[in-house]
Amino acid sequence: MKQDNLCMISRNNLRRYFLGTLEARNVVCSPEVGTVRPKKRSVLIKPSLLLEVASHAVMGVAVGLAFAFLVTHITALGIAALINSSPTPAAVMLKFVGTCAATFGLGATLTGLAITLTEDHDTTNAN
Image (cartoon, rainbow, N blue to C red; front, side, top):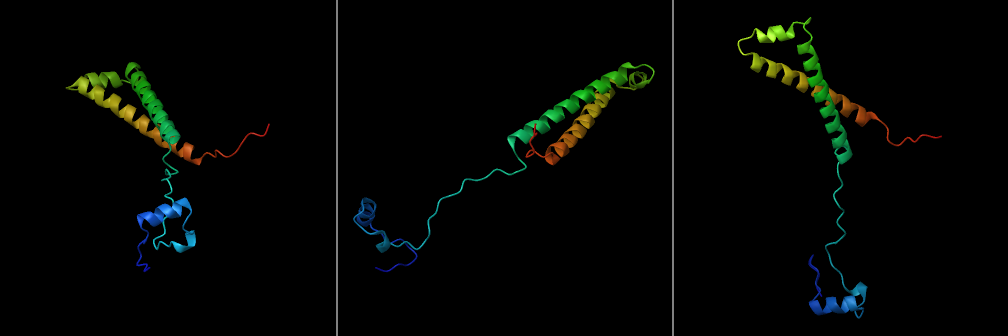
């Protein structure tokens, strides 16, 4: 029986092989067939990491909105008067609040990501 990189097993021989009537050493397949390993997720992309980064982003946006609220409501700073004196106060207020929220959100996200990636999860408290 000639082996040309193909498994030369007929259906009946295969049936006899699995039934135990044909010895395993007489049947040779050239291409090795192995188990397929499941794909592993990347170490950096974990659902818990994404959840932590998202929570930091939401907290940053909330702090940015609070900052914009406080800054526009403290009259000594004059931010509200400056916004109201512009030709389109609603658009300027929206840009100011959006910029504050985006800046704080991005800063909190990057800070949270840096803290999360550098903390060591393997240490345990020995009490």
